[in-house]
Length: 67
Image 1: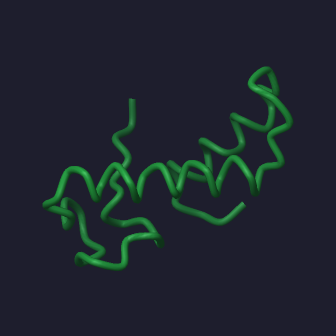
Image 2: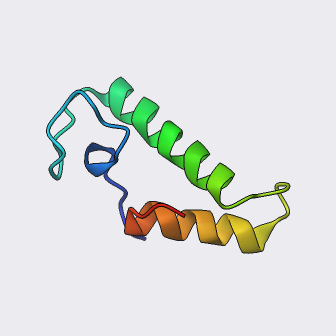
């Protein structure tokens, strides 16, 4: 499993965008959820069974790229 660093995400506007840059756990979760939602939306996921597009979304999260 590859750990995802919310601190390096484009939605992090409060802390340095470096590995482990976010020190506030709640903020880190908030940023991570924003990134997940954005990737799912950009990947055009139609439903929870749309594994092809969900897989694409997770690749975007791991690679930190815009879909």
